[in-house]
Each structure stands twice: as C-alpha cells, then as structure tokens.
Amino acid sequence: MITAQYFIANWKMNVPALPVWVRDVSQAMLGREAQVVLCPPFTRLSAAQMVLTDTGMALGAQDCHAQENGAYTGDVSALMLRQVGCTHVILGHSERRAQHHETDAMVRAKVACALAHGLTPILCIGESLEVRESGDAEKMVTQQLLACMPDMDDDDEIIIAYEPIWAIGTGKTPGCDEIEAMHAAIKKQLHKRAPLVYGGSVNIGNAADILALPSVDGVLVGGASLDAAQFATIINAGK
Ligand code: PEP
Image: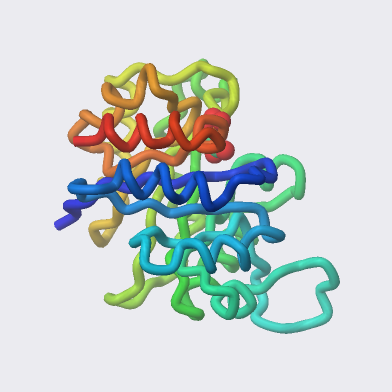
C-alpha cells in the first residue's frame, strides 16, 4: 500500500540557496507522510547530496544514459548517479523527448538500466494538446506507458508521472475529472502497484485539489519547486 505522498521537485534552473531550500522544505515535512525527491541539475547533485543527509529527502537526477559504461562523452550513466548518491532518476520527460529526440524505445532502455543499478525511475508520460483535443489521449498515453516499461522484477520500484505536455510550464492544468480518468486508464495497465503522480503547472493555488484526488499519489513540480516557500505550501496541501 502507498501511504506517503510524493513531492518531486524538478529544478530546471540553478537555485543558489540549496541549504535554505532544504531547511524550509524539511520544516514542511515535519509530522507529514511526505516523500520528497529533489531532482536538481547534474551540476548540483553532489552539493545536494551533502545537504540532504539525514533530512529524509531523496536525491534524483533528470536523465541518465541507457548504457552503464562506454564512450558517450557528455552523458551520465545510472552507475554514476548511484555513485553521487542518487536513488531516483526522471526519465522520458517530454522536454527530453522533444529536444533530444528520445523515443519510447530509448526511454525503455534507460528505465531498464536505471532499474539494473537500483535506481527508482520516475517515468514521465503524457499527451500533446493535439492528442488531447482529438479525444485519443488515454489510448496514446497508455500505449506510451507500455512501450516505455521494461520487464520488471518483483522488487523493482518505479514511479509513473502523468504529465500532459500542454500543462508543463503553461499555467494550464487538466480538470480533476480528466486527471482521474487518465490515472484510472494508466492503473489498468500496471501489473504491479506503482505510485502515480501528476505533473504540469502544479502550484500553491491548485495543489490541494489535485492532491486530494484518490488516484493521485503525489505531484511532480517544476517552476513552483524553485521557491522553497511555494514548494513547502504544496507539501502542506497534501492529504
Ligand atoms: C516539469 O518540469 O515536469 C513540470 C511539471 O513543470 P511545471 O510544474 O513548471 O509545469
């Protein structure tokens, strides 16, 4: 059974005040069943690992290569992420799919490699506005999920993040009924219970409504996670 709600911070900028952020977010976690995963840029992973010690927060990266080792200049492997203290890694984010031409097959290989190294993948799936408007969103997203999921052992852990592309960084969100419907469709495809989080313009104004949904096990937050006070408010809006 999943009891703690997940609060995943996807920092797409270099936030300077890491210790202050960790202090403020730690306070928000007091007395709550909140699992916070901080995913800063690669360049901040070492520094984050040091300040996260004994906070109960987990450390995640925003991508990894599909191979453990090799001549891949500029890429970072799952093994390297483990060595720097990561326990989680975001994979298949729509920005990487669009900007780095990552296919479902590539994402699946990355998920498999992350699992092989004991990392918990945070697998992002979601539809474009065009697909949403065509009425095929559930079909497309569930197909994407199946295409990105490798065979898994019983003790492998994975988090699924439903992130409609049109909601990321836009201030737009699906209706609560649309999130529930999509999450129900996703859950039908999962052979094992995996936390299912929502991402896309989660902020202090909508977090309580989204986190109250029965199918929502947490949130993946981009922009609003950069500000410790806002992220703390989002944690406090949890169940
Ligand atoms: C994201 O980066 O995955 C994201 C959900 O960003 P934002 O919260 O800014 O929409």
